[in-house]
Structure formats: structure tokens, C-alpha cells
Length: 134
Image (cartoon, rainbow, N blue to C red; front, side, top):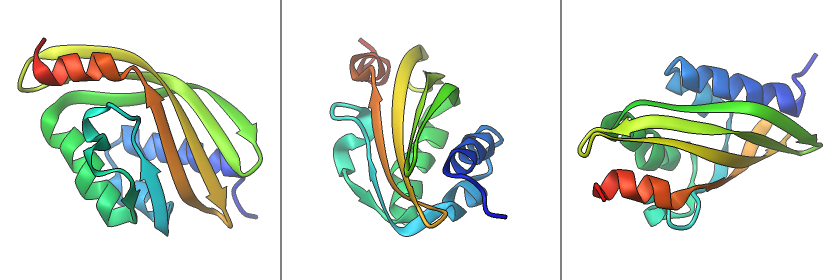
């Protein structure tokens, strides 16, 4: 029996929480289109296409630039091939020691058991303050 789209997304957050990058990336379609929120520090390379681009441009940067960065969903909204996750980002930007605690909304699109698209919405001003130290 295959996983539901919601179960796929729940499992991705669980893998991310335990720093299991290979499991996260294996859920992605080879042509995934990943879009960071406009104004977010990692939107500079939007859109990221393919798992390697997401790993290098987003995940590695999060890992190297933040202490204890977490994306913790509190609610999932199932819209068929789209799953919306609502939650919070927390973490401390290493260079400035500034913490964030920001709401997020993630829209995931799943087709044939693979994630084909991601769109992030969050408090970009809070992230920018943490990165710039202001």
C-alpha cells in the first residue's frame, strides 16, 4: 500500500528533524521545483530545480549558517495533490547570534508519490534581521 500525500509530507518533516538529508531528498522528484519566499535569505537562487540544487542552495546553508534550525509543523491541510503545512521556524543565526521564531506556511505538491514542488511563505523580515544582525 502506498503512502498518502499527507503521510509523505509528514515523513519529510520527521526526517528533516532528525537531520536525515538522504531520506528527505529521496522523497523529491528529480525535477522538483523549490521556491523560497521572496525576500527570504535563500531566495537568491530561486527557483531551485532538482534535489541537488535544493540540498546545496537551501539545506547545506541552513546547516552551516544556523544553530538548531527547526521547521516544526503544527497543522497539515490536505488538498489532494497539495499539502499545506503550517508551523514555526526556530533557530539562531550563527554569525549574529540572533534567534528567530517565525510562522511558516509550506505548500507541497505531490504527484505519483514524489514531491514535485515546494513553495515557502514566512516572516522574511525576521529572517533578514537575524542574518544582517539588525
